[in-house]
Length: 220
Image 1 (cartoon, rainbow, N blue to C red):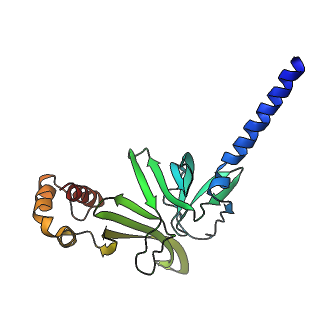
Image 2 (tube, one colour; image 1 turned 60 degrees about the horizontal axis):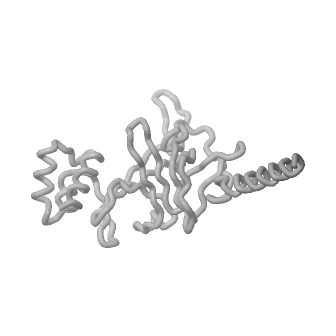
Image 3 (cartoon, rainbow, N blue to C red; image 1 turned 180 degrees about the vertical axis):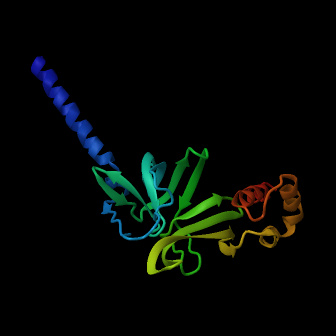
C-alpha cells in the first residue's frame, strides 16, 4: 500500500509538472527573445519602466491573466519575463489589457487596425473608447539627436509621439484634440455633445475630455 501511494504521488507530481510546463507564457504567447537595442540614449523606450499586470488574449485560446508586461514603444510590442529571459508577444496575440493601479484604470491595446501606411494590422493601438464611434491612440517613441548649450557633442534621447484617431464605419480620421475637431467628429449631434462638454467642464484639448465626450456621444 505504501509503495502504491508513493507511485500515485509520483504520477500526480509528473502530471502537474507537465501541466505547469504547458501553461508557461512563452508556450502560449510565443518564444521570441526580446533584445534591448538602445545604448547611449537618454530616457526609456518603455511606456512605463516598471512591470504592469495585464491580461493577454491569444487567438483560439483562453485569455491569460495576471501576466507581468512592459510595452516597448519603439518596437511597438509587449514583453514578458520567464526563467530569467524576456520575450515578446507573437502575432497570434490580438489584445492586451494592462492594469494601472496608480490611476485605478485599465488600458486596452488591440491589433487588427489598418490606418494609413504606418499603422498596420500587427501594430498595437490603444482603444481609449469603443463603440459606434471609437477613439484610438497610437503612441510611439523615436530616437532623436540633440545638443546642449555650450556643448558641440550630439546626444540621443527618446521623443514621445502621440497620434489620435476617430474610427467609425471602418474609416479612420486623425485628429488634433481641439474644439474644431470635436465639432467635426460629432456632426449633427454636436449641439448635444457641446452642452454635455460645457456642463461637465470638459476640455476639448484633453484626452480625458475626449474619452468622456465620445462615451456620451455613443450613448445618444
